[in-house]
Image (cartoon, rainbow, N blue to C red; front, side, top):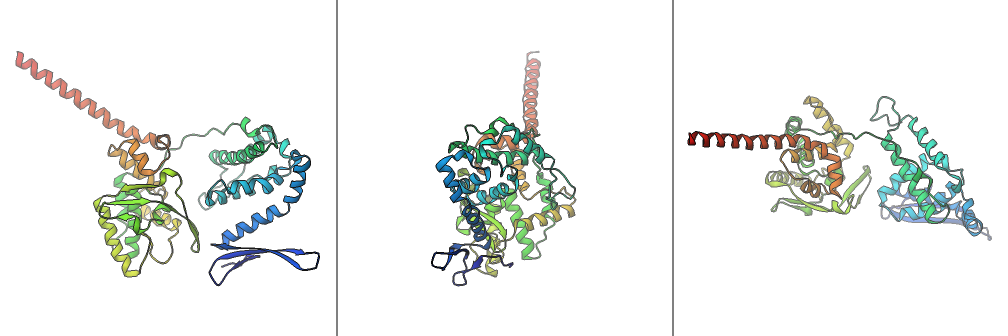
Amino acid sequence: MVKIKNIYRDNRNGTWYFKVYLGTDSDGKRVQKTKRGFSSQKEAKLAYDKYMFTLGFNESFAKQLGSSSKQATFEEFYKSRFLKWYEKQVKRQTFENALFIFENKMKPFYHLRIRDITSEDVEDWMFELSQTVSKNMRFQPEKTTLSKSYINRLRGHLKIILDRAEKEGLIDRNPVNDVSYLPIENKKVDFWEFEEFQKVMLQFEDVSITSKHRKLVFELLFYTGLRIGELSALPWKHVNLEKNQITVEKTLIYSKKDEWYFSTPKTQNAYRTIGIGKILSNKLLEWRKLQNLLGSFEYVIQLDGTFTPPYSFASWLKDAAIKAEVNPIKLHSLRHSHVAFLIDQNVQPLVIKERLGHSSIQITLGTYGHLYAKSDEQVIDAIDNIQKSEVISEGNEQLELA
């Protein structure tokens, strides 16, 4: 593991801590700040960075508040006030993801007094973003500009900061409110038909435990609609093989093999218990017997003492699809495939909403509404069949009268 300055591991309990040297006091003694108890090197580094960000701004900003708080720059407000407040409002993963955006995309505003930021500044910033070439070459081999949906997401993060500034009285009105979202086209989700999924699964022969493991994971994702983080965090104690049910109570946030943690599900509705059927229950029972040959594991899809990276499953799924001559889809699209499968079986939207753990039916219909076009064909067929029956019945009655 790469050593990071000021970040250390406690060999006694395996946790991480940071240590900051702050110079000397009036007696010439070294002054230092130490904070312990972090579960990973990354978490300790994040805490260290946040501490260093706020260290140099707290005093100057406090003086500004005493005289004229509206003279504060965007950077001073963000680092001295906003970060402390925001971290308490959101989950850890949300904070870490947002911190990257705050530190890398908001810099054009750093030097501006927060009261001087106008809607024109925000519009210019969004236009410049729209001309920026995406650096995510891993998934986009050809150079492309930032997507409109991503820029709208950045706009939303800027709005959060300036909403807080307005709440604290530093500005009279949030200028972002006068800037519209960039128009985007609704993208249809990718998914596999059941027959396509079956073709891909045929690529995983039951000749090794690793092959059985991968196939089981993909089947669980397809037939349950779970997110990969939810499935990874599923313990055996939340699997009821008698009632053929599983209960979702947490999700795995994975960075590296030794950097992961559990978090609460995405929304309150994501806490759920769903049925899995007898066939899937039997497959889980067989898998547990195989897993026990390797050792004692708390979590369903563990193959060793840690967790398999989600990107590994994504890579294996793509390779299998190519071999099966099926158009590859993302790992998360197995969740979409689950919904398409349910719609094809005439399952009602409200049932799908509960099964997926969506917070509202609008999310379900907004994401998967276009898939109901196919089921509408079944409705038309049913109407035609009923009318045909009526026509035949009327014809028989006329023959009897004749």
